[in-house]
Length: 330
Ligand code: CP
Image (cartoon, rainbow, N blue to C red; front, side):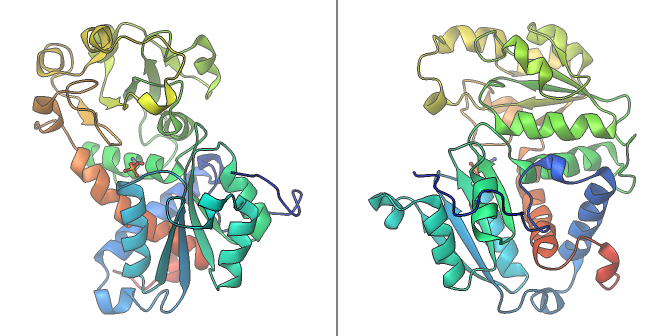
């Protein structure tokens, strides 16, 4: 994929979400309030919000959860959607990200949801097109909508959905375990959760958790011993072992599972009350076993459900505003 951009200095649209750092804690609170309003709003009222507006889903990488939930979110608000995937479009013939973006704009797209395997691609697209761009995961950089839905899942678990602020997660330890090195989910979560008061603990073997990961966000801690990390965990977020990004790294899957798999024995012994999360897709039997993934502490399916509401709110913000008072009371 080519990164040629017409005007690299152009400003990005204020409705874009390129990084979780683009939004302040009060804006996060507004988005989550908006998500709840949209989720509980009568269908007829909701589809009028983006009636006839055009949203393009531009996916250069595979996705199930993010793509489907953004599409359903857009349709739930009344928008028209079109999917452009690298597998079946002129991207395969070498068309650049810039040219693809301006082509979608010429066809009437008013907002682009982008997943790319290149870190920084969403910012380039936002500058190229001037449209609101929602980053649906860019390489090893960020996955901001995932961090928001993860936050909503945690707040629901702790029963503090109504109190989003700088101390919402005060006293809570979130242990993020696995392939931190390549994880945009870990990055966006680390950048968000600390701002809400959580203690973020990164855990994994050296190959997947380099020392530099401590610089991801202020105040984060590192713990290589998973069992010890679990004893502190109020939340344990498991990450997928991303085989597609492990080229050149010498990782033995059996050894990894011995040290870092979240299995029932480990969970019951070290974190019997912790919330279990995973952004998906899971590799069952590697980073997590089925008894835990489907067990009573798991909210992995809830994470997916929260994705729909959060992405409706992000689309509303992209087109209209993030202020919940713009909507009638639910
Ligand atoms: N969590 C996540 O991004 O999943 P998908 O790759 O299925 O979208």
